[in-house]
Image (cartoon, rainbow, N blue to C red; front, side):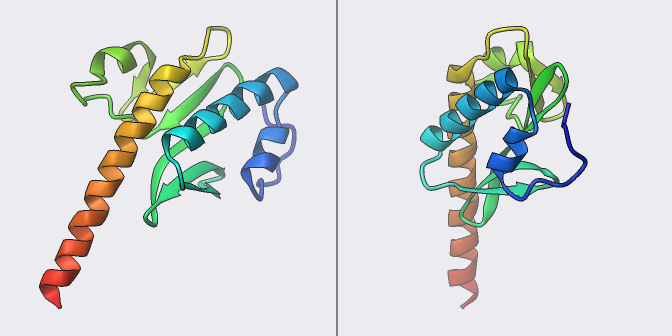
Length: 133
């Protein structure tokens, strides 16, 4: 679906490579992620939009011809398993079909879960550094 073969330098440029209707959806996903992960840094990694906290990724998303994929999805998290199941598309991947309503509430829950995981990892790393000092 991308209109150019060049690698996007930032998320704005990435989104601009899609048709206007898909751009609107991607901007809503971006806004949902930003609200659910305050302070997350935006970048492009693996040629797709990436959001990082504490120096590590929280979530990626990518546009395709018929869907938008998000990674990694906590498909086995008990509190999200049922909500993510209809969108599961492989190990750690969810796909939101462009011809169906995008579940922004589910996306927000997924991102908040990933933020908590990220914070736990950052705390564990910090503890390990203090113990080794």
